[in-house]
Image (cartoon, rainbow, N blue to C red; front, side, top):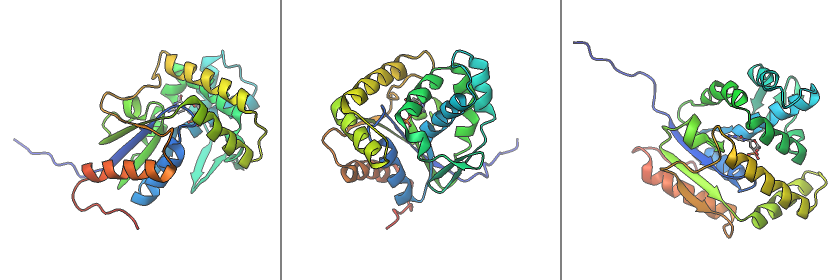
Length: 234
Ligand code: DC
């Protein structure tokens, strides 16, 4: 009988899922920095596909064509900048209309399939923090720590309003509340990988929590689960 040994180093995965503007992107990025882990912003991938579809005038109804764009997405992540071909689209993809496009292309099963291995490719030592809608349920079901962030629609509309104004995008709070509501509906009711907490996820309501408090809670959960010897970065 021959024994087999795994040579790949262990990768600790933290998934942070939740509805739009729940604070998951900010929390995930800070947690990744503190732990020296890689970071996957899966929403950015759907936004890039949405932007590509818009620019190439590909109809959302043409699922195969949109999936084709996802399969050959010429994107690059460099530090906190995101490139499509050679263009820096970090800020462009944050526009509300691109978020809505992202939610629409995300409802197409062939697009989700096309982005699957791109996302699992982010799993690299020493660890990964992945944020999105289906990180804990579909992409990384093996994650050691799964978090589901929520917040009231009003708190999320307020946050999104501030983010957009800071980035110089026009915004109206009543329109944002309506967009959030519609996006939640689409993201939770789609047939493939709907937004939902994994059965083993820890839920954190951030309606009345600051970013630092949310980060501390996630790090506390991590410390309780981490293998011995993993230290937090200063
Ligand atoms: O997290 P975000 O707001 O950047 O995501 C934009 C849209 O992309 C979101 O409304 C739905 C879609 N999305 C998805 O379907 N699955 C993911 N894992 C991440 C985002």
